[in-house]
Image (cartoon, rainbow, N blue to C red; front, side, top):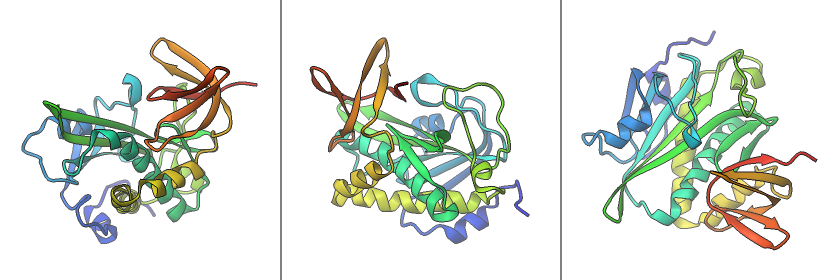
Length: 261
């Protein structure tokens, strides 16, 4: 039987990293894991992970609220303070979503797909979302915080959301151990970070192979701008290339959805 209580010792057994998660902070309740790592100057160790069972002010992309159920999900953030370059933040964004997707495939053999820029889907239902934020000092990035929310053992969901949600439990058919899943994600993320340093094309190709929307007609909303076109590809920086009648437009950020035929 899978316990709802998070057991740190079970996570430690499976964690196989040099720096990601070696400093692990557990909180029962907190306003926001991202906010804590962004503002707490006493926390400086590269790769620090902060996991909270419950967030009062969990955030998603584009100012949306991230709703998580206590003891049923994983809501955690990772602090990065070394080898940070402004031009690879988007690649880190893609990299963490890829780490989640690979972990779900490795552990539960789930057919996972990726939605640009960083949503993780199973059968077009959202199982995980990512929020990357940074702090700069002058023209230098001081710290980057990668926030991850994964629906793990929720049996049902209430309310109507933009993308229908799902959980690992619903897709796998039974509850799973959260400790094992977070360890796998951290292990995969460290590998991906090292690949981004050596050869980003490996990560980009792996991400592309899991994105079912490449080659599809999509709608992109960025603020008040609404664009339609063919999701042609992602470029070497991980930005979306949108093919339109007058040429190809590079999309730096936005909310992407399939265009109804």
